[in-house]
Image (cartoon, rainbow, N blue to C red; front, side, top):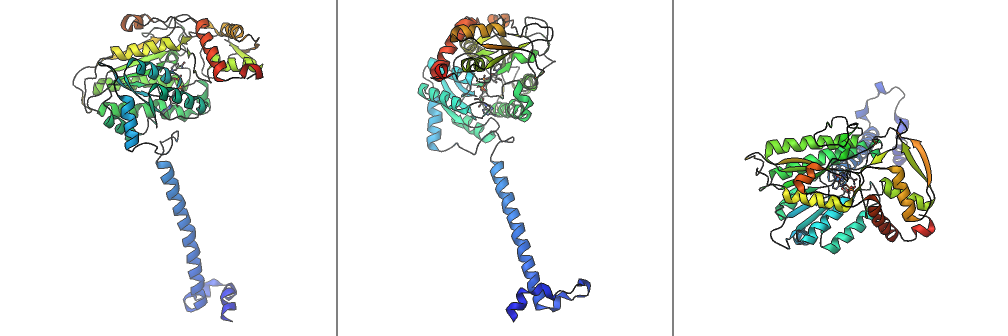
Length: 431
Ligand SMILES: NC(=O)c1ccc[n+]([C@@H]2O[C@H](COP(=O)([O-])OP(=O)(O)OC[C@H]3O[C@@H](n4cnc5c(N)ncnc54)[C@H](O)[C@@H]3O)[C@@H](O)[C@H]2O)c1
């Protein structure tokens, strides 16, 4: 009977609850207890879910491009130190950010080959095929370069790296690259190119001694400029894309850190870099893939029906420019966040000085691949791309001894050879 009553207690509640004295009934007390229990269960599940969510996301960088902590421990420190060890004196000890990227891989290998100490850092994000980044990592491992998997937004990791290694230089190449992707994922540009950039500069300015800082800006800062060739003295206040705007912001931020903290800073404005181990999001790369697949190739023409042209620069020339910038960088003057005197601040164009229309790039690829492309001429979309780029490199020539030597056909031949080797079967199977 009691059991039955307990189960059917809802029946005991009169339809006019205002008149019902809850505290007088033992069944109602039980009802209150059950009610309390179920609410407690609901709230504790919410709380647990909240803590799990907080724990999971708080160990990731702000915009979530990185992964859970994967660094630390004696073995990890041993690998870091070994990779950064100098093999010839005098030499540089360089932290290369974006080391698993296209330019980062080439620069790291070149530094290591001369006997410099090199440590890589990369978050292996999925902007393009991470398998390609892993393959570059293997190449780096063979060359003796360890790539730490982490994000430039992770201050604790950066401080740890500076604790373990007395870096003399930072070659900062990590960034969210690409012009068009900003229309899909704008926050990734702010995360890496602004927030991450500031985070890295913060750590660099606080170390003692401060490293000299060399970093990749971009020709895109010239934006809608029509005066050619682009000179470092030209205006850069009309960016045509968010990518360009973040690089321009980077140049201004760099100036601030140079001015306030005495960091020696060199910005390099790269012009359309291409070559083996390149980036799949760039035209020369996906044109090759699509020509082999028999897919149509979009060739954009400007609104005045003029051709779109780029100052394509071969990777080996860019590497020479990067190494020359590192070698000629003067020491930072500050230490532990305090400036002790004016420090070097430089910006250089690193281009090829001979723009080539994109249609001609396709003709060279057709010749090298021995496959006719299906060309589709389209009006240029408003997605952040500019009509042409053309570098004036006289400043880099004067101060860095920079002199590009590879013409587009020679460079593309090397790229195509690498591509067919890296993607075996792409020619026969059509991609
Ligand atoms: N390739 C070009 O034509 C070109 C032209 C102008 C400027 N640049 C600049 O040169 C640099 C290198 O370009 P790339 O072509 O080698 O690009 P890339 O995308 O191949 O290399 C960048 C690397 O940085 C890593 N990265 C991105 N955000 C990171 C973060 N928050 N923390 C750690 N790692 C991060 C990526 O995983 C990637 O491996 C970039 O700064 C780019 O903006 C390149």
